[in-house]
Image (cartoon, rainbow over all chains, first blue to last red):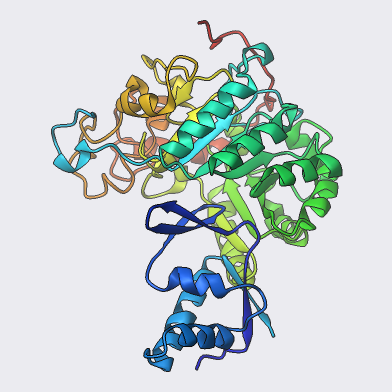
Length: 94
Length: 377
């Protein structure tokens, strides 16, 4: 588990998810557009400024019971950290 | 179709992503580095709301994502909220680039209610008197007042833009601190790019090499300090760079610009290149312009390139740099951008940059001259 597990991620102002073509979901941000692949859109749907990183992981686990918990946790962490690096997600203490 | 026989990969049309609309050239500011052309469009040549609305719909249908409403000062358009509403309805991500002059609490709320996603506020300096000097207007205090209102908007992305140059660069740390106190998600520190009015004032604005090196350190420190809270983006002056910038993401690769009268340009200053003719959005739809307009096709792909660009590994990274800069410095829009160290004229650019700080000239302020470029149907 990473040390951010108790932190609460929140989308920065002006970042929003939009579906673009039939099967393409994107995250619109002030300076561009990020294509959401794999579980990215599902993770983002759980980022509401209320749930902590570990609660997001639990919610995803509930959607995909067979998946390994550590794998989900790693994926959630990696994705959210990459958004943090782009100033798209802000972390606050729970 | 695009005619470019050299590279089969280039035969498909690039996907445009951004539309820049200069809604008006009217502006209460007279910035000495304004990127608007020297000859501007008069108020009575400006496109009416319904034409802009049509353009926004066409842009969204082409897959364009971002709409940048700029000017001049976009707030000078009384129909700005209406234009934001129609672009938001079309599905575009809407950004307004403003001086905040003409903004009130009520007007800001009307823009947000219309669907504004992002606001970019420009600052000229950390020091009020100096800031007003570069803007040629008493604007600084008003900007700070409006920033306090913008900060309280819960869903509006906020970027503070600051243009830096020799005259204000020694106050960079104060400028960053001021921007930070305004509570934005993003701070953009852009060195002046030398086009339009900035080119006229180049000798007064060009930083010294020492200033540039110091500012790079200041920016790096601020970037790591603010990381995770505020995204600090820096644009360096390409006169001192090794490689040229991929201007507007490559000519007619990602972006279209419509001027106040409806002329479609591949970049802000394309009008300075001789032999260009720009199609009007009054006569053609946006998709036609992207595909067919001679101005867009002129420097698209590689066919126009000379050596060393033509065989360069970076030709798809920086696209030979900026055509306008090649024109301005070398008088040849097909030449390699002299900002590139591979250009045989690279030293000319460095000489210009290094000679500038020893010169003292009068600052020329941006004024709206409307003597040419008038749209005639």
